[in-house]
Length: 496
Image (cartoon, rainbow, N blue to C red):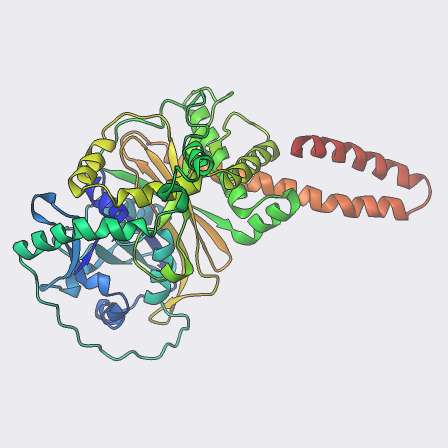
């Protein structure tokens, strides 16, 4: 048995009837679809590479310790790999509606916490796979590593032999209690050696300790205007949609406007929230939407471990700015400042400190945390880099992959981004009851990408025009030079 870390356990503790805490994806493949039995055999032959997929959660009686992972003695692959179909005509809307229903359903806590749904009936002979994995098993980066294990990198992979498996003997409740008591003494001592120095020795390093606290509190207490409709109670049902983008186009924007890929993505999402709020008649002038951006703190030694190793930063999306370039400049400045601050370090330190909290306190904090009204954070935005080479299942190429991240507590919308084979795909999750206009947000993200790309194209053409104007003598050189000067001045003012 393996004891669950405090961050992983928290994802279990916060889960309730209205807050399923699994991540997932919708992967679309070229046809024809494999037979259901063939897909089951493909998954079975690779399960030995991810032992967690045959393990279930065991809770310690009276919450005397954090839950543990134990082999499921009744593991049945047919329970986890399932088969369904979309109704005709099998278009994007039908698939999105089906995925929204599947992704809103809780995973069975008595079983290993994952499902894979094979979906047939898509137009053009395609098929899809809807995957669900509980957040206590993986974070976004670990999930990407898992994706590279489950899928093939060639349409003609070598056949893997069947690896026999037998579950380890289950421990009784008394053993779980005894192990939890021992762990409550040993684990804190082990954690002391892994905490950052500024947490272990605040007296010896008072300035660093101050920076730690300041990094976490930076900008949080500063008064700001936030939209009202993005926070509030949520229901048990979900809307889910996607936006398709191009990684090459985003990189073109990055080169032309001087930013990062993540900055461009956040700028496009800002346009989406601006459109959403304007369509609801809410004021946007001087307002911002604060988002949690998870940051991986996974070391090279931890790569491949199926655990959560993320901290977070909290930029404000400037929905009150109408100009796309100014929005990008504002976000780029914020992200640069956040990298220089101690926010991510402070978040990682608090994650480490959670390992010292008694399990009963963790459970109580998790259950109460989602029920408390809050307006500090309006959304979650996570950007996960995926493989840039084609993937396959049973010889069928993966065409598109759209991510899913949950919403919880008082947050009604979340956005996930996943890059794959030159594409940059957005998965947008919303509460079914309070976000009926999810399509407006998705359309705004598309517009945000398009307007930034148009600016990038104009700036790319400008040097060529200027060069043509200088190289040609005579009266014709004056007019292009004047036009270039006016355009350059306006653009320069917008991007400073």
